[in-house]
Image (cartoon, rainbow, N blue to C red; front, side, top):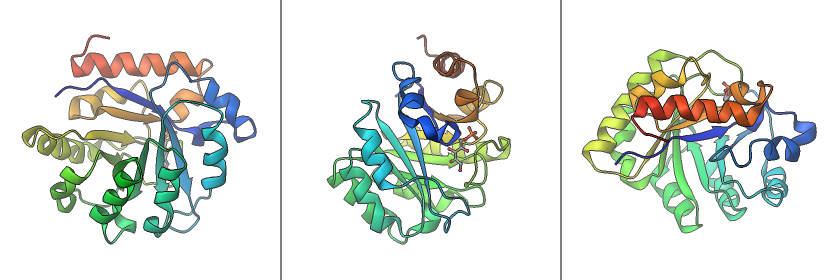
Length: 226
Ligand SMILES: O=C(CO)[C@H](O)[C@H](O)COP(=O)(O)O
């Protein structure tokens, strides 16, 4: 199955003092809004949490792609599903029972995603794909925006894509970190079909136009006419 590319701008790169306006700037162009939740524990950075997501949910209809870079995701992830997140992704490195948490998220009405950080191999998690809706391959070390894309992470993307294709699974293969006009095509060619972009979108003069350009580049490489 070939799916249209998903472009998910990361609000981490937006102006937090004007969060709702920043979201409205990409509405109608972007597919998902990527929401980076960091706890100053699992990663050294600290961003936003559930109250902000609950408030923002009322300000826009764009689907939320929540990326939990937090310890003990089993304690917090269901709250994001209940707050109306479309997709809730937690880290493999932080979770003892990924299948159990994925089932909980689905029961709460969300899609379930598993994130794999830079230094984590993907092989042990390939057998979990039937329980997942998204696999997020970090193309940087999780924790900060604005880092350089790591092309060596694309072997993980290829591995996941191969397993998804062979198993005829309905799983999005998402990449996050350093995705921009000069890197998105490599990621698409490796098999990614969902792309998080922070700096490349919110650092652009016209964020909506930047989203459209990224989607066109990805679609062309995926052989999809838009
Ligand atoms: O998860 C993240 C950081 O851990 C961000 O989503 C990611 O860094 C996106 O930002 P950029 O496109 O600027 O790299």
